[in-house]
Length: 354
Image (cartoon, rainbow, N blue to C red; front, side):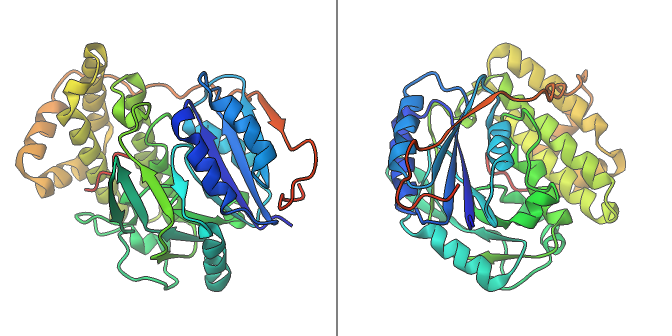
């Protein structure tokens, strides 16, 4: 039986992929599988992954025939995951040796739906520890209670899918898949849904994921139209939260966080291509008008300062609709497994707070 499935998307990360794969090898166990998803890379990444199928115990290579984005790449891995537990890693990050074994032991010990963990943020040679914004550690908690208060950084402002481990029952309930085609902010509707609908979680201080920031090919560093997917992502958060039984309590947090994201992107508008900057302004105006207006007014009053002034002005500008969701047509995937058994193989955001 597979104990843990690790979903690892890769796209044009030849500079970093070998480090990622070496760290997976240092975490291999006979009952772990590593689902390596090549999202149609055009550099040397595919060749590195082909070697990994031979060299990394438990590795399975899944290839997209066309680039689909991080959310869909993760879904491709989830669709083939067989583990009792599931987790994620990005193709340019890496792990401490033995980290996954410690996470699995923590899941076995607590019995929760999911665990959230701290991580190490790496920018060049600088490293810093980022903590899960949950003050009570190593306790079984209600995920819904970790969404609020609206005016503070909470668990839903720490959206990183790879900073945790998740029980298979969440996958079977449809809570682990990501919105198809999202190329940025894909973790936002995902983390909100998880905290609204899962039944139990815990936060632990286990450090083992090293999150590489400032990568030139990362969408957080590229000012093109794909960045605007944050609007579709958070429109989904607002829509789903508005339908929740506790909408009156939760919507102020969702709206305030959406406003913080819009403010963050508009403040950095100079990094966008001119046409994209114009679309960002118009689409942000449309997003502000789609929000529940009484809730928005309350959020802006609570925020105060220059951000609130800017957002009020932006709401008055000519709006544009959000980008349409991509066609959820089936994704063409090829699967490569080791040609012969390998010892140890399985048998088969910008972080923005309110």
